[in-house]
Length: 274
Image 1 (cartoon, one colour):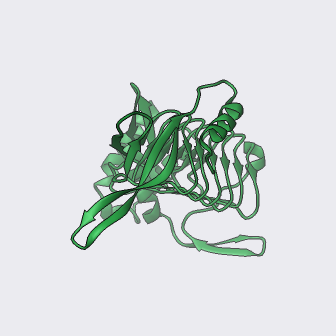
Image 2 (cartoon, rainbow, N blue to C red):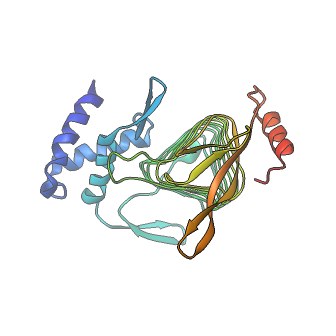
């Protein structure tokens, strides 16, 4: 397959860093990969046997793209930008609603039915069908967002290009991310989860499931259909005991074919602010 051939060629080109900005064949190859990302034909992650993986060669292509591209002035009506990466275009033809002044970079993939309120989508990102990216939300480079997801106002989804092997933030289908949540360092939010406002998750943030007699501690992954709020836990330091931010799983959202009803029930049941 052509994609397999391109992958091998990218791996070879990656070893020739001194030639990235001068070799025309490398530039052509890298541009071809970015165009494949733009069209949704390849993406930074893959899902196989129930697990997410990282397509490192695609991340390498994006890094190389920054080297082969030259700075250019980009004019959009009265607005002017000066950058290496073009702005995404042809939203009408792609079935995407874009509210000014939302900006998406070329080399991101946005599916039909997506609504972009004034927000920012970086290169390498993937957004599934009928997802809402609300006002002043940021979808970082290579962040992966599933279908029918609501990313509320002011949410920050961290981008991870390097290290190459690192996972980006991954949001699975039918997830609701509350206002001002910050998700970084490759955290995984599994299908149907609901995060209340101001939940902050990094790879080292403790997650406590408090739905049973004893708390269950984990890191990095919010399980399917979990209802999550921000919390704190005490930690002793030389100068005293202080409270460290954490996330708390306080219940489960019912799996339902009617996602809107299921979400509303979860919010009422747990008194959750999103």
